[in-house]
Image 1 (cartoon, rainbow, N blue to C red):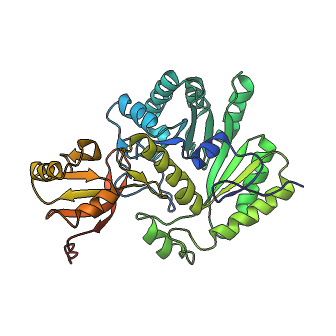
Image 2: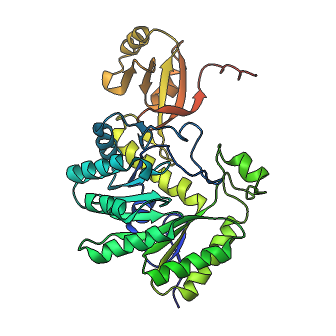
Length: 366
């Protein structure tokens, strides 16, 4: 009998993980959000208000204004592949085909590309378009017929691509999910990815009020009962699926492995010499602000601090330096000095600010 294995990213699986999942856990997947346009409205969709039905693309958190944005973000984040998502990317199929070709031409055939789609209306002819462009792996959310068409394309052509499904573990839907395992096993698919169900800013109210779902105890986003459902489906797959890979992707994997590792990889490529990467992948450092930057620089030079030990950030209107140096200077200078943990995205922001020599302004009440 097959075994349920623990992955490096707080998830469990029966069988060998798809390449897309392996790179994702390592933080080596560029998240290529093609567009927020989708012709379905699934109650559990986690897309944010700001992206839902907005025809704008993002490479990780970087807005896409040209192909160069995708290529630059992939290089900066140390990506070895990309996960193409949305919305539903097939709503902008020509854009998807173009992006696949651009990435393969610039990063080579080994740059692994997988795509998520609900698959509704995704005909065999359209599937052939992304196959011919170089897509390596496709994950369907709803349409079983599209799964069969994708497998047929693989049989009819020389190049292999991995075919599977990716669905949420809705509490109480164990029988349906086990049926999907049976269907995919018989069809000759490669995998099914079961996602632990999560709340988000846009689906929270609908999931709680219309579907009576609740937050799991001790969890930030996970839905109560989803984890238990996923474990039961894994047990079923262990006993009944001979070849199919079944991966239970937990909420913990997304936060503690996927995102964390992606941030660490990106931070390593962009960090300044005085910045330290925190355990969670943020950039730790000190900042000096609250006065004209030229005045701050003059004071630093008077103290014989080398220009190599700090950075003048005009856009942020502050001086950045090491956390240790900031602590020392907080006792000598009149300027405001703090420690920060910065989110290392294309448009960085301060995740946490710790004042060293001043009182923070009280939070505004509405």
